Length: 173
Image (cartoon, rainbow, N blue to C red; front, side, top):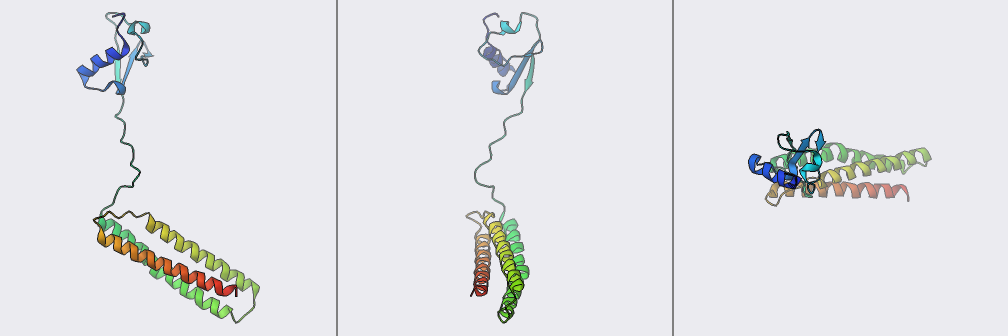
């Protein structure tokens, strides 16, 4: 008993309980027996002493670097929501912005120009957010419908982004 190492006691406990030694905490007299290379006599153990075994939870699987794929219908719903945002909100705002800039070109008001520059920056940022949202959607190789819908939404957002850039360039002519 004096020469028995803590790791040997843990191995013995593993045979009885099935708990892995790296998931065990052994306590004797309130002391945690955490050095597997020391003999158990260092902790004051002798015949008739009680040792408490506590099982630690199993380590969780490490998250993979790839995000977990969602099923195709969920992806399609998210893409459709993003596409709706592009079609209803952003496309309408871009058209309004274009009309405002064309009307502004007939004037020379500096405050109005500043307002249009800021609105262009705002629309640019909103479209970039949409593109980032679409970029975050992972479509598995089997989800051809979702991949195609995502591709079309990206193209539409990029086309609007190009249009905003063209409109903004009119302000600097």
